[in-house]
Structure formats: C-alpha cells, structure tokens
Figure 1: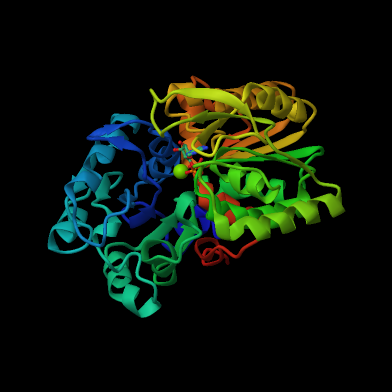
Figure 2: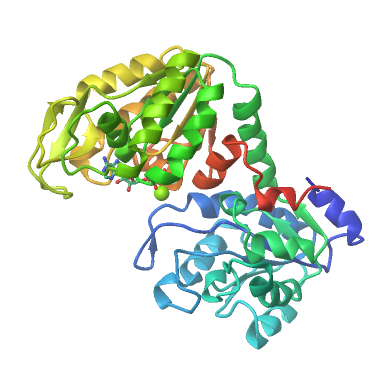
Length: 405
Ligand code: ADP
Ligand code: MG
C-alpha cells in the first residue's frame, strides 16, 4: 500500500496541502455522551502527524446508520469535540455541519496550515453507501474536490466499497494511514504466520456475518471456541433445544458441515457445556445456569456458564496466538457479563506470558475497556470487527486494494 511519505512526495510536501482523511469515528453514544472513545483515540496519531507536517487536515467519517439524510442524533459534533480534547492543544479543530457543499468548502478554505476540520457524518448523503459506482460518483467527486490528497485511516470501513473509502482514492493521490498499516500487519500475521497453538474465540450477535469466517478459520486455527449468540446455532446443529435464544435456523445445516470439516482436519471446536438462561432479555430477568444440552424451551441463553468459563480458559492456557471477536454473552447486563470477563482475563494472562493476543470487534473492544483493561493488556485491539474478519477470511477488501501501488 502507498505510504504517507509517498503521498507527501506526490504533493511536493504536505505543508499547505489539503489532505482528506477517512477515519473511523463510529463510536457508541449515549445521547451526546461517547461511551467508548477507543476509535477516536486510534485515529489521533495519523491526524496529528499530517497536521505536524503542515497539512490542512479535513477529517471525514460516519456515525451510526442514518438513512442518507441528516439526523441530529447521528451528528459527528460530539466526536469532533472529543477529537479536539485528544489532539495536542496547539492544533485547532473545527467542525462544519455539512459534508460537501458551500459551507463545507468555505470551512476548508478557512483552514490554516496544521489546522484540522471535521466534516459532518458522511452517511447524511445517500451517495456514500450507494451500491453502484455511478450512484456514488457525484458524492465522491464532491468529496475529492475538497482536497489535494487522501489518506485512508479508517480500518473499520476498508471492507466497504463506499464513496469515502473506495471511490475518493481513485480520484486523488492517496496513501494508507498509520492505523490501517498497523492493523493490516497484525491481521496478516494471524492469517499467514500464527505461532501455535492458535486459538480463535468467536461470539457476539452478528451471527450470519460471522459464520462465514469459520470455514476459513478451520483451515488455519488449531482451536475454535464458540460463545455468544452464535453458539445456539451450533448447539442446535448438535440436536439440542435452544429455547428462545438467538438462532439462525437457515444456517444449521452449514454449521453441521463446519463441525464435520473441523473433525476431519483435527481442528478442535470448543462449545460451552453450560449456559446462563433467562426468561427475558433484561438485566433483572430471573436467570439460572443449565447444562448446554438441557435448555428449557421457554428460556434464552444470555451467557456461557461457569463450567464453560473454566473449559474455555483451559483451552487458552497454552495458546501462543489468540484472536477474539465477539462477547461471550450479553455483557452490557451485569448478570450476563461473567463469560466475557473470564475470556478477557484469559487473554490478559496470555499477553503477559508472551502470546500474541488480538481483540477485534467494536463491542468486544468496548467490553475489555469497560472491565478496566488497557491497550497494553493485549497485543492489539482492532478498531474494525467486520473488516478484520473479512481480512482473515482471505477476502479482497476494496478499501485496501485501492491503496496498492
Ligand atoms: P463485536 O462488535 O465485538 O463484533 P457483535 O456486534 O457481533 O460483537 O455482538 C455484540 C453484542 O452481542 C453485544 O451487544 C451482546 O449483548 C450481544 N450478545 C452476546 N451474546 C448474546 C446472546 N447470547 N444473546 C443475545 N445477545 C448476545
Ligand atoms: Mg458490534
């Protein structure tokens, strides 16, 4: 991928040049309050570097899933404020309530060397996420028209063929930012050169998104530990009752296939032996631990049970490489956080023992920070869940290939 140094050469130096940076600032918000600023922090080094070299930095990003029109609750304004707090004091940060248009152009023109401007949410414009190149073209042109060069630093979106990710770099001199470079380095190690034993833990709620990666992981990992919402499709594939738990009925046959392939290849699939079930999806729901092969028909599984925690921790104890994506349970509610805590602690312990530990996925990353762990407790906390999974699947990521030389 092209580097910022190469971009600087293309532009005859960055000083006085307007550089559009695609960052991933898609943080969880509670009203105006950012509940986990990990992605804002991760985007600081590239923005700061460009500003230090005298570029006029225009940051663009999306937040949430607005439907192609402005919606106050998805404004990037609070994120711009947080970015201002995190950047060095001598760097001026402004925000414009428009992505492209007269006000955005005026705000870009008002920038001095080393200043930073944050544009409003990209997804307030339908051109950002439109399916065809033609539908995205006008918006991409307008964005590209704001700047002299482009830096792609939003690793969390590089698997998307969207205007700010895929079309703009085809219109402007471009480079991969430091965050994208470091994320890709770690993911490449996981895909091509993991020290063994290599254990992968999968959980979370986006079951159908994540089932696809299992097939490719069976080819590289030594062990696959499954928890979270997707585990019920596995338990069902083994013929067990899963009550009202998350279930992808149409994936049960596929999962049976995975279990067979794994058995043939000698890849160990570790499933929970007990489950915390509740009568509803709420923090004060009555709950109890039941065997994984004895779930009542009217209950939903919201966490792995204590025996499973012990089993999972044991299967991580000698791992030299661990990749973890997706919480083991509905950890946002205290009664169902225990499995996720146990796995997080197991990774922290393996990090101190010298293993490479990688946490991927927005909610998983938020969970480990919520439990009080820091960046240093892990080898790497990825800012991109979907992107890292697609990379590990061996897919071609449009936002990465477009940055190649
Ligand atoms: P990540 O962002 O780390 O990739 P996901 O977005 O796939 O993870 O899933 C995170 C969500 O999964 C959390 O909000 C959590 O409450 C939910 N979850 C985990 N286990 C279960 C479960 N058994 N039933 C319902 N939701 C679950
Ligand atoms: Mg998530």
